[in-house]
Length: 438
Ligand SMILES: [Zn+2]
Image 1: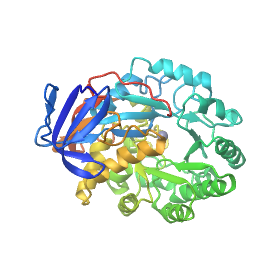
Image 2: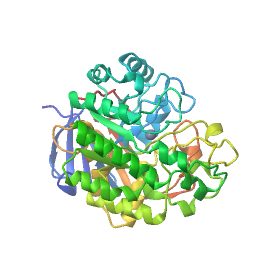
Image 3: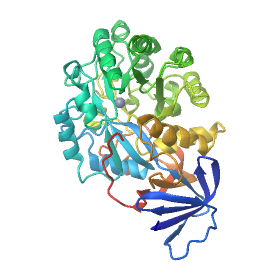
Image 4: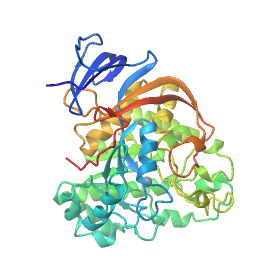
């Protein structure tokens, strides 16, 4: 086997832990991993700086790229530049808020051609389960989507309607039939309606319109439907710690339920969100400090499986619409580029290691989504690698982030950790490829 490159690192996060290592790369893959001083005659060599740690690139399974149709919100070029700058080497794109939404093989083809030639990291696609796509999900699965997203409450865009309980059962029954995966925006519309008030500029009032009970009730519905249909299901962007006991019980029962949370729920807390600061608006919302600490504990114990960014930007006009009115502004946080550093910053503060962060942001999401050749530094895997300067301070300035609209809840945040160099398939500055479910 010929080698194209060897990367030597005083610190590398391998499946066995953090050790010094030499990583041999050939044909886009990791060919061998040896001791840091392993001889490599004639092979081009990169030696990482003493403050850099070699990590498998992050795999972000929850990103809204929005192209085509809402490319002014975000597009493949800018989103994948942001990903690469943040150490994310693979992202999986959500079926909304692009137009058309990815709910048919034809719409997937439109999305793939919109992405072609514009990606700077690996990109894969989710399909959508909406009322009109029920009964024809298999065709989309066969085209290589990683699974199907549905909402149980209004999604925020008219072209992606939510499923009612009966439709959820139909979707899960269908998906179970071909061994697919349903990923769910779990908020109960009846609970949301009961708390529907005008929050104005008050963040606490906004938080009260999306209570924890909305998440808990919707997750109960999903778990009941899993028992009935046998389908695999995944709870997206969990914010409510009150749902954790329910999730732990479902897992103990042996149901194939998985859960993600997001960097913003692990980083921010409601008391520190200024009134009118709609860059922090997302649904479900950022909650209390006590709630945040329970999410960290659940991540440590495995009740929460992994972390994904839910990068969901819009134009600055929409994000700041209403002059700070949380009822009017678009809900969604732009956090793709900051996700790895934000989670690492919170993790090290709480005594976790980079090995933990790699598990939450690379190994587990890769394994869960079926990307068996990603998520770890070991022979046979893709050479998607990051030289991460773990202790480098980073004061985030929204206007220097790579995503299209320079609005971010992280503006002004003091983070630690920069992705200094990134290899996709063993090549720096390479164009990424589109990945299908293997
Ligand atoms: Zn989302």
